[in-house]
Length: 253
Ligand SMILES: C[S@@+](CC[C@H](N)C(=O)[O-])C[C@H]1O[C@@H](n2cnc3c(N)ncnc32)[C@H](O)[C@@H]1O
Image (cartoon, rainbow, N blue to C red; front, top):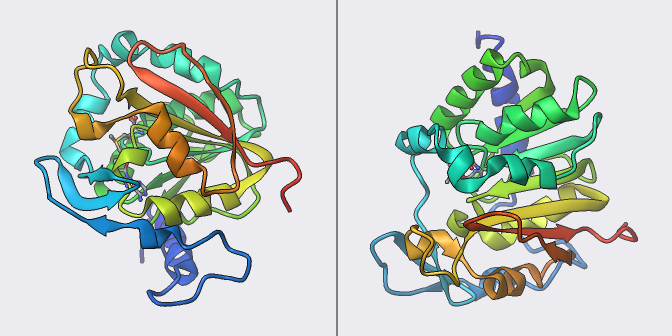
């Protein structure tokens, strides 16, 4: 019998698996053009997976051993995560997602902001990260506002049309299936809901991060343009990262 702590994770995994499209299944009528065809094989560099999307090599996923780095005490000062959270303008009662949540650095901070009436779906592909996250949110006393979700590489396992905001911090560049995942994230937003991408600035050689773990604004916008998402703004408030806001059009069905 799974423990009560693990039950939500197992249920989310079952939902994600049943919703996943088997390889070769045709896209639904009216789906966005098959950008998956844009994946190309190429040289595999040191931090990459040898798979290219819009000319960009996809980076390797940060393993659970990187959790200590995500939780480092100097992170707030280096990345001004306080300004990032403020810029999200979360309101009590909001239903949001922390996609690629890692150890939950942003999950519990978002949970504090949405209050007892709000919810944070915390999506991870690594079960060990999700365990760290659950311990983290329990320690902060916000576990009842957090729904841990074990997603798959192609399917975030999020409900459709349900979310006010989805946050991806340092995640997008390492998605193995960026087209499929972004399409699912766009569907998970309410009309008018926001998708917020935070990525280290690829244009800036001074940002001390490996090149495949950075992105330029032009590259992000190229990749988002194949989805039913509008570009809203690039909030220039962070010292090292872009904070790019996209929105599902309010008229979306
Ligand atoms: C660099 S970490 C960032 C974690 C967190 N956003 C933070 O800033 O503290 C990226 C995380 O994204 C997760 N990830 C990568 N691909 C994913 C996918 N398809 N679905 C969900 N999580 C994913 C990885 O497992 C990893 O924990």
